[in-house]
Length: 283
Image 1 (cartoon, rainbow, N blue to C red):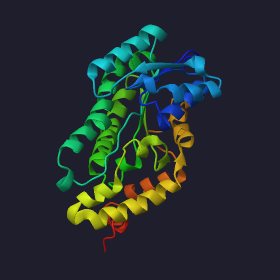
Image 2: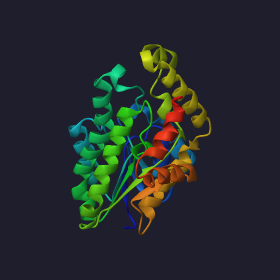
Image 3: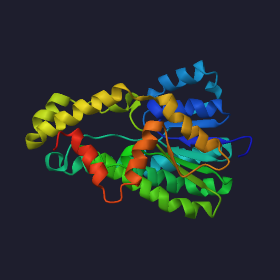
């Protein structure tokens, strides 16, 4: 990569995006830290200041559900910094529920943010990444490999992102752009809190699925009690930016590696189904 290198990262107001922005700046990148609401940049800039890299972090408004906002942010980045050497698709939103109860609206909303937003940012950035022989890194999830109960909409969107990037990677490589996906597991960040879930209300509204949802929630809350730090989950994002030969698929922890490996070796799906059935109290 060139000595002067610029990366655009989406969803940097908290969690992995914030940590990746600071870590990339520490690694010498000029970071365009984008978020839907720049008024929420205080935590990011405080972290960048504490790390001594605030001068390398530039906040930009970008709403991944608005193509005009995406195009404007990419154009302003190139105009201000002369090039766009890398993009990190990180912005995302979770949803908890099941299709019979929730209906279609949460599914469409999840796809807009987690899938179509990634595709639109990628489309806008590719001419500049191609010119720079750059990097495209996307934060997906172990939920983009293993379908998880009551995460149907979220997992569907993340599966779609994984398929899109896996198909794009060899095509992008022909024009010098390296594509990687980073798959975190449970991460101790504001991602879960930002969903503002009223768990008792969700369970009350779940009808015949209430016992399964309660079992799932109890198990999930315990897993997030042992979650990976956002800074540790962001480290492989920066490695994908910096490595001379980054792999396509990168897990953010040993647990995530083993979880994904179990799915990829499960040709008939029985092992994953047996595992996730336990999460919802199924026999």
